Structure formats: structure tokens, C-alpha cells
Amino acid sequence: QQQVKQSPQSLIVQKGGISIINCAYENTAFDYFPWYQQFPGKGPALLIAIRPDVSEKKEGRFTISFNKSAKQFSLHIMDSQPGDSATYFCAASMEGRGSNYKLTFGKGTLLTVNP
Amino acid sequence: DAGVIQSPRHEVTEMGQEVTLRCKPISGHDYLFWYRQTMMRGLELLIYFNNNVPIDDSGMPEDRFSAKMPNASFSTLKIQPSEPRDSAVYFCASSPQGIGHQPQHFGDGTRLSIL
Image (cartoon, rainbow over all chains, first blue to last red; front, side, top):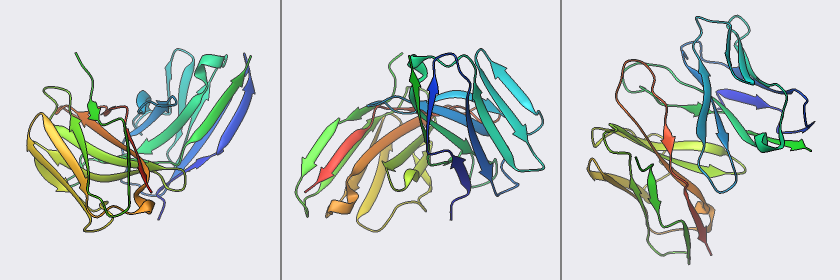
């Protein structure tokens, strides 16, 4: 059972364009939604994260939009650059006995930014 | 400070052999996670430890897999006997204890091929 659904599977964007990746979750107990970035041959690295008490969080060119009622959140990359080409994973987590910090990942989106 | 260190980076072995993957977490981190990454299933959490104690091993696929954390600076993931379907990239991650969710820091993974 996939608890976090991510789309699209792959995305091609021109340099300077906006990249948008979407995720939907099922478990309303999730209370932490990070995005991880992974380059080839490397492990994932935390990019940005949001909690459900805010609808948007921005860090530089990266923005998370969060819709609690729809149980959806998305990553927007403004002014996309070739160096942003990587695989992006959304994830969700909840606090609680036995599941502290346990992340459930989406299946990933391979982003390619053409020069 | 050094990041999470995994060894070996690559492992090729024949079906039926024992495989041992190693991980050194970031010093001072209280949580350690083992993940498996495949194209079909994405990133899956296998097991995680808190203060060297296994907390949740529900992701371990079967009895052929075992994980230990004898001390705060070392963990192993063992597969015995190995099968071709175990071929994947295995990641170790660690995170600190803190108030609320803390980021997970991933190693660069071990690429395992079972022939």
C-alpha cells in the first residue's frame, strides 16, 4: 500500500522555467513533509520541509505548497537550472510511539533541466 | 564533520553467498536507518534504531535479512543467503535526537549486485 503518491515520474523543463512536482498522502496523522534531492551516485539530501500548520514555505528558488484539506503538497522550483537536474522525493512522517521520524517516501521524480 | 560512511560502495557476489553491508553514522546522532532503493519500489525503509536499539523492523523483507548496531558508531545489514532479487542500492542514514522532526543524513549507498 503506497501511502505517498508522487507525480510525474519524470519531468523535462527548459532552463529558466518552473518545475512542479506533486504529492498526495492518505494518512491524516502525517505531520511533517520533507522533500529530498538525489544526484546520481549519491544519497538523498534534505532540500526543504513543511509542517501542516502553514500553507507555503519558501527557501530561495524552492517553494513547498501545502493543501491540508486535499491532502496534497507540491514542490515548485523557480528559474530552474541545469544543476537542478536530479531525482526529487517527497516524503511524510508522523510523531508517535514506534514511528518517530519514520519517513514514507514517494517513488521519485527524475527532473531534467535542459540548457 | 564527516558524513554517514558506508562500505563497500559496490558489491558483486553470487547467489547464496552472505553479504554484509556496513555503516558509520554521524557522531552524536541517535537514530540510524537502513533503506533499500530499487526502480520498481523506490526507497523503502527496512529497519531503524534509536540509541542502538531496533525500534521498527517491519520493512525487513524476510528472515534472510538481519541488522545489528553493536555500538553508537557502527551498524551492519546482513543478507544470508543472498538472492538476485536482493540486487539494489542500500542506504544508511542517521539523524540526531531533538525536539520535533530532524533531517535524515544519508550515506552514498552500497550498490549490491547478486548474480
